[in-house]
Length: 305
Picture 1 (tube, rainbow, N blue to C red):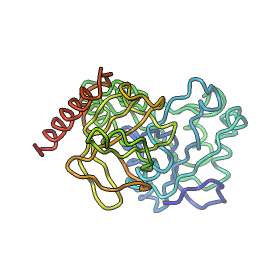
Picture 2: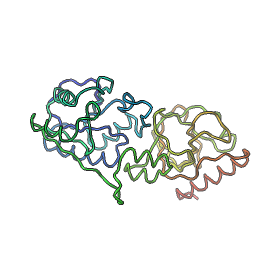
Picture 3: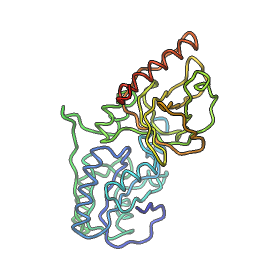
Picture 4: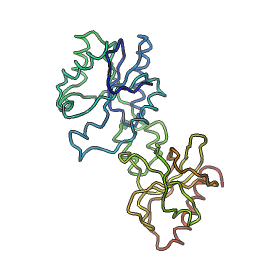
């Protein structure tokens, strides 16, 4: 899949519009519909999204942490058959752009066969552009417009990125996985830590992730740690280490039954189930005992006990 930052004029395309944070089941429904249309027209499918969350520019204090980095988003989209992802530079000029100017920019960069957007998609200054305006522009300029309805859970709750962030913040990674269609994951590099886990008898891989990546509720989770060559069951502690505080939020994974050397490697942590919330212990001995119980519960979860 091509990632485009400076688009050149292109021939026929089907375009999907949206932010696509997390590429959840609602997004997947939209992208699958767009891919089917692009196949009918025998043209590539291009996703047009922004290089940052719009609130980063419009109201930075309200900008949410992200469920997916741009590389993660690209991988998820590629798996759904997206051919191109255009990263539009969202700056103040883009934020102030009238909806008609936004659509003109879109049309001028490629021949549109169809545009696919979600039911709640808005565009242009103050979100004044909506589905009706998009349909009217399509009729005027000769391209189809498909508005994809929301996707809901069994109880009728509409799936959204904000709901996935909420469930993640509650530590409910199992419901988060239901919303996304995959286990929520963190990617990053294994860096040197203080080796506190090793001193306690539970060596850990200290993982440094993107600073804007959404983290779950602080606590201990059963997870899968994926390297370039293997996937290993593990427990991961995410939080402030209140018993042995470092002053920073850390992500430390202990691989069950193994102690591979992972320094400098890029890894992915997929969160499977919360074991317990973060807790401060009165002594390192109490912490060590609890870590042993955490590992035992994770081993039971993975049928290793």
